[in-house]
Length: 159
Image: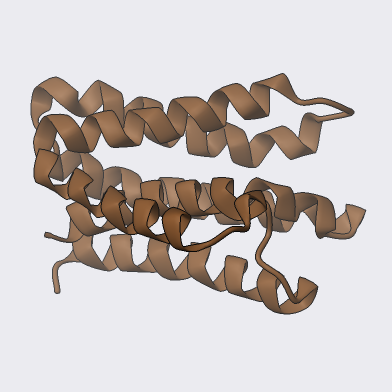
C-alpha cells in the first residue's frame, strides 16, 4: 500500500469511526453527517471539527496526486468545503448559511472532480438510487447522499 493510499484509508477510517460512534450513541442513522454536531455536548463540538479537518487534510495529498493538473483547483474547492464545514460549528450561532454553502460546494465539487477524471465511478450512484427506491424513509436521504459523495471520492483515490 502506498503512502497516498494509506492517507486515504486513514481519512476513510476517521469519518467511518466518527459516524459509527454517533450512530451507536444515538441509536439511529443521523439526518446528515453534519447534524451529528448538534448531538455533541457543547464542550465536545471540537470533535466534529477535528474529524472534518483530519478527513480533509489526509485526503488532499492523494487527490492532488491522483487528479489531472487541470482539475486540481476543483479538488481544492472540495477539500476547502470540508474544512469550512468542520470549522463552521465553532462560529455558528443560529442558522449557519456558510455551513450549508460549503457543504454544497464540497459535495458538488467532489462529483464534478470524479466526473472529469473517471466518469465511470459515478455509476456508484445507482447504489444510492436503489436504496432510495427500496426504502420509504426519506428523512435519512441526505445522510446517504453525503456518504455516497465521500465513498465515490475514496474509491476513486484508491484505484
